Amino acid sequence: MSGTMTATDAVGFMVAIMIFSLVIMALSIGNAVFWGLAAYDDAKAKNNNDALMWGLLVGFLGWIPGIIYLCLRNKGINKMIYCPNCQFIHRIVEPNCPNCGIQNQFAMPYLTPMNAEYARKAKRNLIIGIVLCALCVIAVIALVIYFVFFAVQIAEYSGSYSYSYYW
Image (cartoon, rainbow, N blue to C red; front, side, top):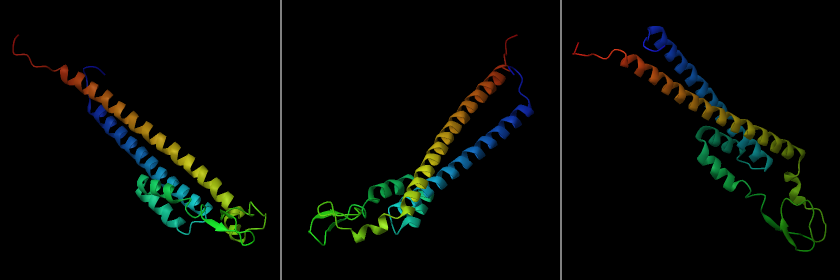
């Protein structure tokens, strides 16, 4: 391709740019969707009443609400309660008192089988989101390499037509 640049080459370049852009956009949208789903499922697994809010915030706004959610997500689970039998202080999610062994009636909402299922789904969605993010970064790097390659081709093309006033 050295020395000759055709209109077909320029059109091919533009089509490739549009395809790369659509792929990057689709990967970014998929990334946001799966991170939002991961936040939603994690919040449901932790019995958070605002699971939908966290899923939407992380899905639409990304990293900052995600970091805030990670800081606040264990707030309800780490609540401490007194055992009604022996007054021993323990976490609300423990099914029995660690001291006397009496059943903790407040732990039931945290011990449902759906919580484990939501946690599994959250992990799966987070892994998919991370893979999509990595693919998006790889696609951006490939696009930059393609730009550089095409810029070199343009430079070769424009260099072959240097005007000289001396015969």
